[in-house]
Image (cartoon, rainbow, N blue to C red; front, side, top):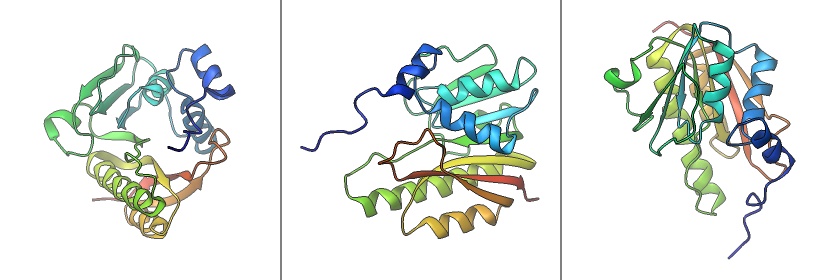
Length: 198
């Protein structure tokens, strides 16, 4: 069986833990936020596939006590994420008005979701693209006009299709590979700015 290159904690992982975050992914969202001025005080944020909670914790600090974050994941999130974060265990991709509509419409929708990998690159890339596009649909359904979306995507043959899907729903699209991304990783992040009118 091949060794998992991500199993050992690196500098970023240790740095995240020292700052109280459960995962190193915090630094990816932080960089994206700084580059596109994503999050501001008072915003409502939806975090799809939020476990273990680093993105929700960061968003909660950025939107402050006047803002709100809804974190949803199939997995249990045990980490305390902040007083302005509501955690729901459930399907992040099921557009359930009773669940996802709690703080809708959302100013920002986040998705750091990734498929359970198989080790077969093409299969994993296709699954990633499917997850990404479904997350875009949730962001479009639950987002405010001119809202933003950030989603993770594995680079591969479906990249153009996924980017076009995002472009059909958001006025401006940026592709960002944060510095905190591991060198071996195929992941990148697509940012949609300015949700189009329904």
